[in-house]
Length: 128
Image (cartoon, rainbow, N blue to C red; front, side):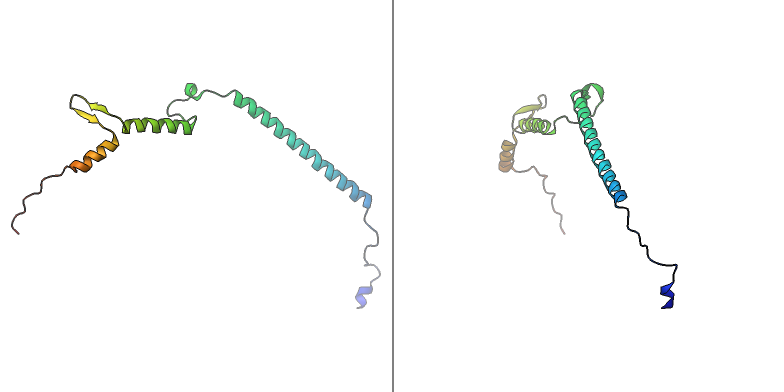
């Protein structure tokens, strides 16, 4: 225990410099506040630039070759389905010279149910 009573090795007796710590905390808060203001300013600037660029959009039909991306996917899908429904639910000639016609799908199902599917004749079973 004698080694703990060494006259040269002791604990620090002075306090911290409160004014220096206070100035550092104030400076740190100021830098943080300035950074937030700068960040929001840059965000507003970039949003305004983006709005200007959207206003000056290019026409992809004039610039890009095929295949092109859809401009409005739901509207294009609705138009596609409308065309498909028209094909499925209308009469039309497929090949008039051969007498091939297209009939509505509901009518085709009824005809198929009445007549049945075409089939090949059963081969004669030989003697086994």
